[in-house]
Image 1 (cartoon, rainbow, N blue to C red):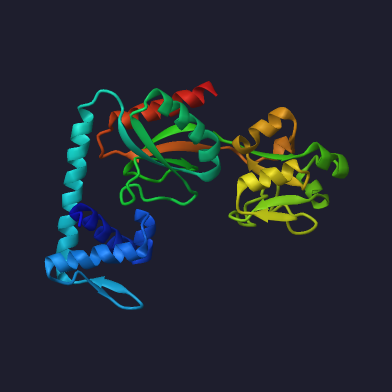
Image 2: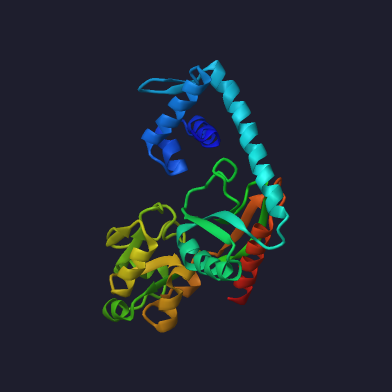
Length: 295
């Protein structure tokens, strides 16, 4: 058995709280996680975890092994980073976390041009709207939208995150163009299921929530799906500007209620301040900043 992989698996089980969650974190099957733990316990000649159908807990030996295994993997990471720093050019793997829509529309294309310049770098781009744990999940960089409250991370402003309300010309021809939020009662609206009813159509200068005649005609958990429906004339859409920029430029979608869209939120780059930045990270950050300035 690969002892380092076994240690990594054991640590993931302890920190995740279950074999299933550890398997998702490590991108392996829960059965394989169980095999690693069983082999570790066999080699060490002692039980590391007490398990039943409802919970798991560390044995005394498990607590000692967890602490020492963490130190071992940290030292391995330091050793790898030390060797990597000897290389003047960026190389190695970067793990990036970014919001789904912004990451797909903005970060992915910029990453592609970065990789064309620095072919020795490999990027793992995880598009998710959840707040990842950068340290425990091993991310080098995270892109976050909104206010930052992480004193243990370095934050660098990247760009504003603007929203837009829009619809297809065919839809506006059928239903008319709303001039104020009050006009939304006469319109069909498309909604993202991840957002709550409290904030999705709460617009500046409007007291309380903006409501429409009936519930959203279409709810979807994916911004790209909503964009497609809007282009097809299904209704009004409130989504990030980056998601519909091409459709706005070619006229397939038209802006409406421009004076009532939500205030832009800041987008920041976050990375660990206790980590001496490697060339692959510093060059990537510079590339993102230059790319946004040129946009």
